[in-house]
Length: 283
Image (tube, rainbow, N blue to C red):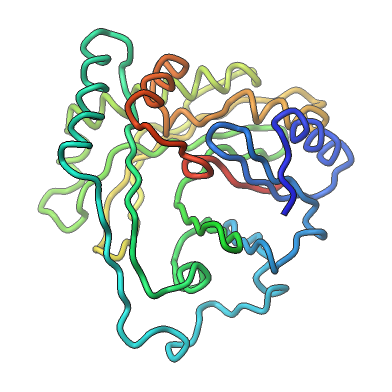
């Protein structure tokens, strides 16, 4: 599986999109490792994807899910979260910077090792998500969230911020009236508007804080999202790589202001995110 540098990937995306050739891509958080390959050249031995129906699962010989007998009789899933002391140190660093006015919102993450008797392909085949990817011997990922979508020259983003257990009494009203959730959502919408304004004109918020229901292994949750749109230049295909990379990493997994918050994240987390919180997609 060939990986490209940022500049190589930008040039390759511009070339493929400019020639109207379909391709699939994976970009890590730091934009240092990028996979870009024509759809017809993707090896299902290395990469399997299903991006809301755009998939190579049939080529890979996969059905909707693995038959029950192919899974262990007793599934083992043991997570090993970081210690309270380690998390408290990272959280304290973020809090200190927020109180100092260096960040309005910071998305802090921690690595959580998981011990399981499932393979990466087991997890991929039995997950239920709009977007999911399996990379041989490296990782599996699944997500409900769209970073950007381009259709007929219109670029749209759908940041998700704000969740609640859907089974709680008055869950919708509780979520919509929560000041913390509303403030966090407003901050990210403003950041995404600014990011889209770098590459598009007539940027506007089409829908604000609409609610979706997501099914999880712990039950349904409510999630608030917004839809932000803008118009790309007529020749956007020839500069698709430049357009995409100019908005990375995604504001919804960093914070605001983005540049300073990314520095705070590096200091607090103490590990490389890799492809976690990167993006995957197709053109």
